[in-house]
Length: 357
Image (cartoon, rainbow, N blue to C red; front, side):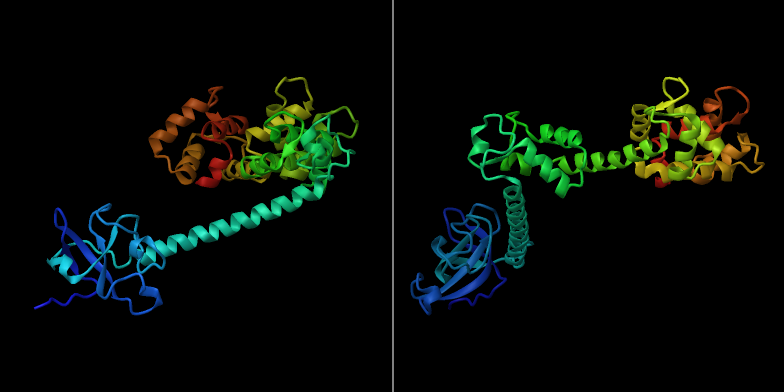
């Protein structure tokens, strides 16, 4: 008497060595256009328990359509005569088709997004490519003359219109970074690679430093290309909300060569050190933490104030906090000045460490 098998049954199928498998679909052969490749009778689509033990991926003889889905050579279609018996097993592939389809759907969505991105990229690339009219900075580059690349002039136009970079020199720096072949023009592949890689970060930094340069120039009232103490104090008050005393302490830190003024290079180096101009407010937070811990308003933290700050804010235990106090009290005054506190903050990872606590 023939055994009835159902979807989900775990069975043992014939072969040189019997193979455990699970029935995922039952097909009536040659009963419709969909099953025309099958012979007469009932066929069982099974997923072998071990990968590579089958002959298909859920299609009969690997011809469309799919009746179920599984990895290549993990599926097989058999008839009742090829099934030895039902078995017990802890394998279950009934959800595999759904999982494969979900993964494919995700891949398709990713592909569609990439396709849309490529299409948009191509559109903007063409928008700034002058069509080989010969009025760009080609430098004899034949690819550009054939309308296949962006010249430096075209890139500058793109950078100004699309990226908001007004400084030609800054745009040229980006151009040279993107021109990995060094041939003086950008192919679509280079253009794409630049924005897929670190290009966005480079652009963000240039835009950020463009704003910094403007703030620096606005503060440099005498046009000396450096900031004197009073100029820096005004800028620090406006950008970082520091009072005069706090700004002067910071001035000493930023003035790396101790010449009594801050050059633009020193200023941007300090901004890099704190992680960008967006961290000005975090520096302000560092000052606030110091002031809040300074309960007696002495302008410095004694041992008890410092230990409490480290315990409350940084979760240090009392003994570790005391060791830190001794290590950073560099002048052995038994108190921590704002400059010593700032040095400590840099040592633990900069002002952003305050945000992580």
